[in-house]
Image (cartoon, rainbow, N blue to C red; front, side):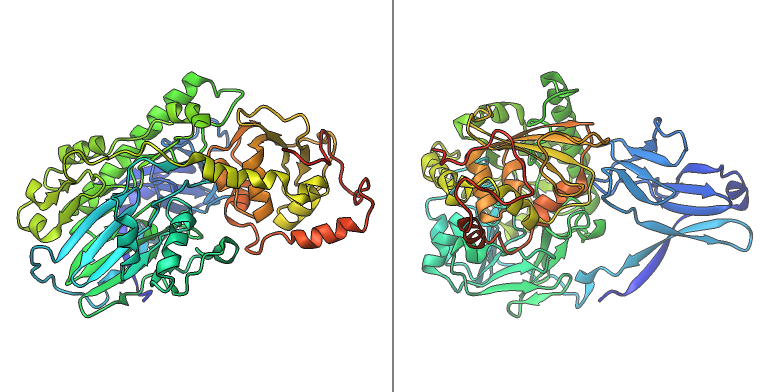
Length: 597
C-alpha cells in the first residue's frame, strides 16, 4: 500500500511570511485550531507540527535556551531543537517529522503534510446487520479479551497466571475459572508485544501442553516478539509473523490488520479486527499507534489507561526526588494521561470505548512502597470524563467475565448489552503463589558463573553497548535494596567498556543502580532485557546529572543480542585458569568469588 497524498495544513499570506522573525515562530491554523512551529534562519524555513512525538504534548519556548532554537513539551518536558528537528532531551533519541514548506507565487507559504494512505481503507466492507450473540467480547483480565466473531474465537494478550516483569507485576483481577479452557479453545491468538504482561510465558506454557498448534499472530517488529521462545522451553508450533498494514483474512467475514507504534516501532503494535464490516480497534500500549492515524467511528475501541508502567519516579532517589515531589509528579502525570486518552477517544469517536490493559498490582509484600506510591488512573474516572466531553460514546468499565454483545450495543446503547458476572463473583485476586515464582528467580543466585568475577566483563562485552560517555555503578542488594556484604559492586565505563575501581577523572554522567540480587542474576544468566528490573520495580536508581540516557536504556531494554550469553564458553575459559586467578582487564571492588545463598 504506501500510496501517498498531501494536505495543506496551514497557509500564510506574504505579509505574515514577511513578519516571521529569525528563530522560532508559533502559528495556529484559523481553520481547525491546530498549532505549528516555523523556524527561520538565514532566510531558510523549516516547519513541523507543534506536537511532541512522545504523547502529543504542546511545545512552548524553552526559557533555558539562549540560542532560540529549542522548544519544551508541556507534558513531560521533552526538548526539541527545531533547527535540526532532533530531540535533545532525552538525548540521542527521536527525530521530529517535518512539514514541507511550499512558497507561493504571491510570496506566501503553505505547510504541507504528506500522508500515507490509511491501509484499512483497502478493500472496504460495508457493515452487515449482526444478530444477537454473533459478536461478543468477554473481558478476562488485564489486556486479555476473548472475541467471539461468528464461528471463530479470538483472544488478545493472554496473561492468566504468574507474575510479569520478573516479580514486580501481579494480576489485579481474578480471571474467570474457565479462562485457561477458553484460551485452549481459541481459533487464533493475537499477542501485541513482548512485554510479559502481554506475552506471558507461564500462561503459554500451560497452553502449549494442550494446544501447541494454536495459531498465534504477532507483528513483524524489528525485535521478534518470540525471541525468547526456545530458552523458555515453550513448545508452540504455529506462530505467524505478519507484515504491518495488510489485511489478514481468516474466513469470508473475519479479517484483521496489525499496525505498529511510531514511538516504539521495535516493540509495540496494535490491531484492527473486522467482522462483517464492523471494526474493533485495540491500541493496547501504543504511545502513538500508526503515526497517529487511526480509523474513526469504529464499533468498539479499547486502550490502556492506567499509567504506572515504569519505575520512574518511584525507584529514583537523590536531588529533587523527595516523596512530595514524586507524589506531585505522579498525580500530574496520571491527570495528563487521562486527559490525553479522553481526547484521543473523543477525536476518534468510537461507538463504544473500553479502558483495559492497566489492571495490575504490585502485590508482593516487599513492594509495598511501590504499591502505595504508584497510584494509577481509575477506568471509571476516565469513562466519566469521556461521557462528559463526548456523551454520544458508550463506555464500558469491564469486570472479569463481563460480556459485551455488540449487536445489542449497536441497536440500543444501554446496560442490557453488557452482562456482568454473577453476584458474588470474586473480582480481585487475593493470592498469587509468590514463593513459587520468587524461588525460581532466586535459583540464579547460586549459578556457577557468579563464582567468577570475570562474568562481569564477559556479560557487558556480550551486551555490546559502548562508545557512550556514561559511567554506571551496579550494586547487588537484598529485598530492601541494602547492599549485600559479599555481593558484587562494580563500575562500568561505557566510553571504552572498561571496569575501573574508581570513577574516571574526565567529566562524565554517572548512574548508580541497585538491583535485587535474585532478579539481576536471573536477568544476566538468561540474557533477558532490563525491563524486568526497571519496569518491574526491582532496582533503585540515582543519577548525576539528572538526565535520562535514552541510548543506554533503550539498548538494555530493547536491543540486547537475541542470542543469550554463552555461559558454557565462559566456564570453559575460566576453567583454564586456577580458581584464584581471573582474566586480565577487569577490576572490581567488594566482589565475591564464593557462592551466595
